[in-house]
Length: 146
Ligand code: SF4
Image (cartoon, rainbow, N blue to C red; front, side):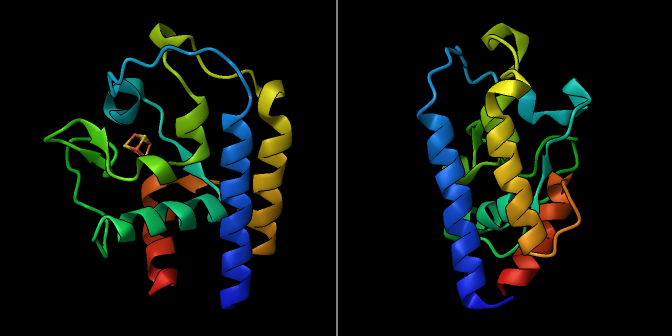
């Protein structure tokens, strides 16, 4: 992947996240982190390639070259000691839109459909294969950033 292509993809993904943040939709996340414990929810976030590259950048910015090991079924980026996300500023789209019922529930798809389309366009431009499970997607992205 060319450096320019990478930069442009990362900029577009961050622009999508910024646009999402500008859309007022009330949710009341209490940081229960249940949604980061996939073994409890039975749901695992899936990331497009651009999202995975941004998440991988976050992992690198946290001083890691690889994903932390996770053997309890939780997201590898959930810090056990603090219950916080290692890459919060770079967390994927699904982590920004999929709230638990206690917090008000997931964003309606129609509310974010245009943003999902933009993520898909970046995925195609990067030669992605569509959304992949978070761990595989970020591991592959970390390899690409080397
Ligand atoms: S990336 Fe962060 S917010 Fe998303 S599931 Fe993992 S720990 Fe939770």
